[in-house]
Image (tube, rainbow, N blue to C red):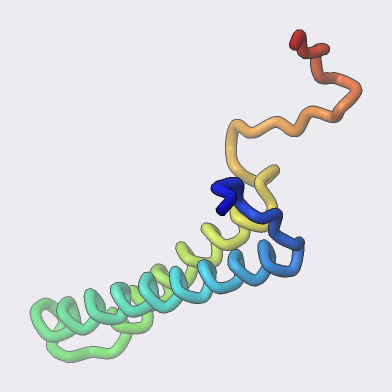
Length: 91
C-alpha cells in the first residue's frame, strides 16, 4: 500500500469548499438564531428583531468566510505573487 495521497481533481476541491461553506453557514446561522432567541426572551420582551439580527450576523460571518475560502486575495494582508516575481529556489 502506498501512503502518498491521491491527487484531487478540481471538482473535488470545489465540492469540498462548498460543503465546508454550507456546514459553516448552518452552524453560524444556527448559533446566531439561538443567541437571538435567548436575547429576545431575556432582554427584549419576546420581540422578533433580535432573532433576525443575530441570524443575519451569523449568516454574514459565514458568507465572509466562504468568500475568503474561494478568493484568498480578499484576506487582508495577503499579496499574490506571480511566478515571474518569485526568487529562484536552490535545490
